[in-house]
Length: 332
Length: 300
Image (cartoon, rainbow over all chains, first blue to last red; front, side):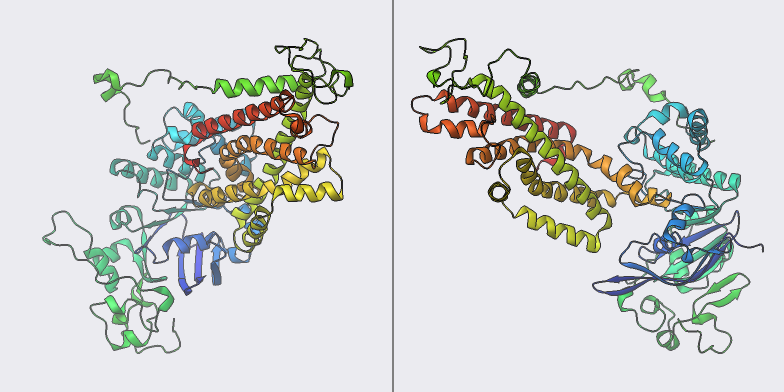
């Protein structure tokens, strides 16, 4: 594999709060190649968004602190950049689309003013060239009559349209990496499908690496090449989409898959995962999933499992896959 | 390209659903009365030197307390009568409008500029910056304007500049509070996060995103406070800590004539009426602006 666009190594972001330190991102590692899509799945609070924000170094301050690890963008460690340098990387090299299209545009400026802004910042365009580029950019995200839309204000557009505008702004550089943080959760179903198709198209056109954050496994199956399942700030299982859907190795992944309704399945009732996600401030030594795991045994309570290989390119943090004797020293 | 839902299928079958070709602009109902009052005073103040009025400083002791023109003994030479030094009341009123209006507007602009800047910075940076700035704001708000102005008047001497400064130095705190509150709400919205993701720095976010979104509030607050400042300025002038005599200021005009209110009521009534009208007009205008721009600001 060529140098990955993004490589995250042992990233650790903690939230220091009044109630204690929360290990929001606790040793996350993954790599992402050009044109590849990684699905980041997990329950709310599992650290998906915090991981993405840490990559951009935008984790909410002053609570969040990135304590360690590396975030390599084309081999360049972002965690060593100065704040000024980061400002130049954001948007231009890495872009992100957020969840709520209703509030992701500034209500007091026209769409045109907002779409032109990154074009001026990244490409130094002005005058006619700027106007034309802005219109073609809106056209490229499937907005009809872009010239008129540029004059509209955000409140005059539908949620789907606004999300397209946000998408257009996100790819105006175009970046190397696009992070989509549940970009379709607040869109209705038909628009969702269109938007996902659009994202795939954009990705293919610009050869973007993409991180797709979601808790919708259906979308993961459609959009992603690989999946990383997060639980309590860690990636508990990672592998190719097919492998994970066919043979989930971690009990948590299995439970997630079983809680998704499937058309034509014999099962009448959906299985819920018992219990609550753990309180990350008071995490004990062992595997974080122990209290909810149907297959937990003594070792799980004693030691946190390291990443154990299941198949080539497929690994899980679960003692069930420890065929070899334990490696002491590779703790949490 | 993903097709947009084809326009007009439903609208074709139900003509009343079809949007009009040109969206009808909602008609604004302007507050004619308050705008009218403000316009009259502003015009009079601006053109005071051009109006054929008598000199507001010229004393004529033989003509002390001449009544307005419609009373016995009144004359067109002094339409609203004269004060205890025989100075023309109308002329002093008009020239007093220059003082009161300019002091009101200047003070509020100064205070809102400082206050908004502090509110924006506090709300944007949060943490320690916010804590320090807000404690300063609290301290400022607990300090009475009149007392500060009195201290200034006693130590440095009363002057127009001192009045403006004394009021502005206290008044900014309200702006800082309100704007900070708004900024805190705005910061939670995705467009702020989105612009940060696009590489915007603090300056850009504050000036491009936060400030324009607080402008409505600022305009409402500024308008509502012009009236308040005019009253404070008049009170200070009344107490002798404001615009120093013989400059015509509404507050000092009332003060000078208050001992004669039973015999020559006009000399204190007309400046009082002027204050009342202008303040009322600004308050009504502010109310209207608030309801029009942002009905959510009810508590201001």
